[in-house]
Length: 64
Image 1 (spheres, rainbow, N blue to C red):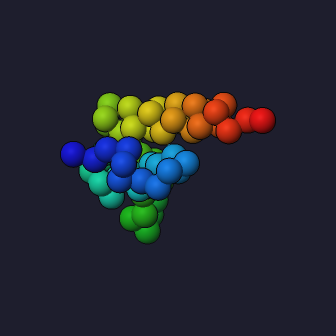
Image 2 (cartoon, rainbow, N blue to C red; image 1 turned 90 degrees about the horizontal axis):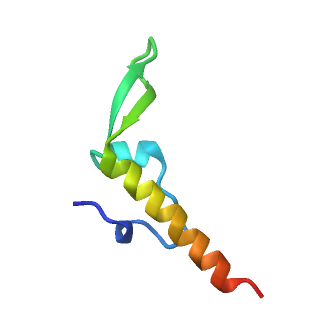
């Protein structure tokens, strides 16, 4: 299972990164077959939310 620890501190995972870790599916492709729209799984959405909350907490703690 993918966790927030799999990404560097301060990094919010992008959807293509989550797709490579099987936390998103391709919804639509262009004529060349490249993905253009993704659909996040609930786990992928939770991971992004956790990363944003972690960054917000860290920013608040590091503020002078």
